[in-house]
Amino acid sequence: MELQDMGMTWARAGAAVLVMDQLGAGERVQSQFWPRESYYSRYAMGMQLQLAGESLAKWMAWDLMRGIDMLLERPYIDPARIVMLGACAGGGDPAALTAALDDRIAVAIPFNFGQASPEAHYTQGPGVESPILADPGWGSWETTRNLAQSISGRFFPWFICASVAPRGYIYAIEVGWSRGVANEPAWARYSKVFGLYGATEHLAAVDGHGSFPGPGEFTNVGLTARKKIYPILNRWLKVTIPAHEYRNLRPYAELAALTPAVAAARRPRTASAIALRMADQRLAAARAKLATLGARERLSELRKAMRERLGDVEPRSDAAASVVWSRDVGGHSVEAVGLETEPGIHVAVLLMKPRAPVARMPAVVAFAQGGKAGFLVHRRADLETLISAGIAVCLADVRGVGETAWTQDRGPRGMSLAATEFMLGRTMLGARLKDARAVYRYLTARADIDPKRVATWGDSFAETNVRENLLDQSIAQQPGPRPVHQAEPLGALLAVLTALYEDGVRAVATRHGLVSFRSVLSDRFTYVPQDVIVPGILEVADIPDVIAALSPRPVLVEQSVDGRNCVVDTEKPTPLGAAAWLARELQP
Image 1 (cartoon, one colour):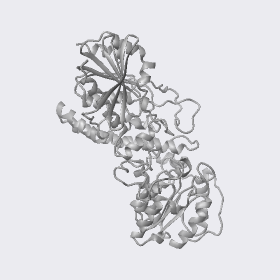
Image 2 (cartoon, one colour; image 1 turned 135 degrees about the vertical axis):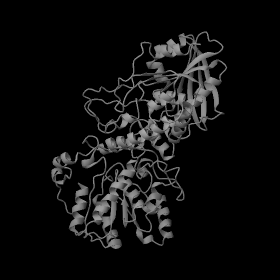
Image 3 (cartoon, helix red, strand yellow; image 1 turned 45 degrees about the horizontal axis):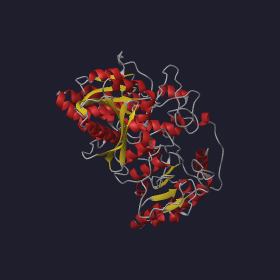
Image 4 (cartoon, one colour; image 1 turned 90 degrees about the horizontal axis):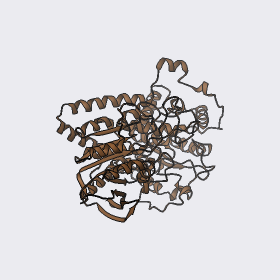
């Protein structure tokens, strides 16, 4: 309603106001029409576009630039007085980015983007950082806020906003500055940048009137902030200060641009459908290139291309291992091992050996989002089958899994860590692959393990969704009438990717892994966690391509799931089961 108030008030004061529905909001919502669903819509679209090598921030900035094009086609618009205002909760991010990219914007007013975590004053207490140090932020829902490579490339939120100088910039936040804007670290940096241009008069600040959470949240651009904005725009651009606030809320049907008749004629496609078409074109080109190579060259090229998307996946040669404890459990020898795969990164490993181990035993290294505990609870019979066959089993908690799981995500599990890795120019899957390869190399270097008979096993203990009559909904904001479950394909991905980079892996078994990254784009809803997303992966390969490259090594694929976490019947089931199949493949 505040967007309507703002538009009508300014229009009656003599300014034209273009209110656009961003992707994922209003008439362009991609999920359900429930409260705050635009969060989930942006979250899902952000992941889907990343897979295709695109970004939601890029698409939004493009849309906003086209909005300026449309305004400038009209003779009554002054091209020297274009103001871009981005409301909080998804509007400030693309507004700031667009203003940095498009110098037709005379004044930028992006709310809640001028510094990282603007509400941290009230959730974490007063900041202690120095004015000369910038906070890059911590990963969250918004790919538009947590831009990929923004930390490694050093284009933090404040830097994007400051690049507007010497044009006008209003540092805006929906809540109140707890100590006044002059004490904000970002304000000192803005003042310095605008001072370098001799344009400090083009810098201003507005805030709300309270704390977070609480009455200070006005969601869009509330009355308190608007009254502070009016005199600034009057001073800079001679925009008339409204005599009074006008309110005349109109019903949705009266405001709709994409009416049923227009929609029937235009047949708009979802963002996921457009991204899928782009991904298919790019993937086809990559596959055509690989098809011209011999088997060895194709494997080498695939490894290189995947590494460019995954980030650094090479394990340390000097990873330190220490046995935390060793004991006999149920007649089995069990070792708990701590493996430091990177400085400060410790992987918890549980190695279970048969009752009467031979000098050089075969081994299976197992991965799952549910970690060691998940295998012990849900796959006890499979573990006993392997150990009884004389095979050692290594259960590994890679970073952020099991004992090291991050429990402070406000949204879907793995979201914050994955988003932060993107900002660092890396991926969570790549970092975990590095851990997985370190575990494999530790295992094959042991004197009691036969390095020529080691297999990888990736599993998931998550409940799948029923395809028939599935009521798609957000799993992160408003729960629907029927539970929807998120997939956990991490284990299968690690098992396959470890084999891709480690020639010595004898066999691979997966259960409830992702059938393809492409399937994540096949519907506007997806229930795949962000921590397995790899930006641009569909520009070089998909999961079936990786599995094919493992030939002639045997691979067992059981009950794969698609992007909606529904089981797909594409594999011929084995009567043996994963454990018995692995035991057979590891025979001398």
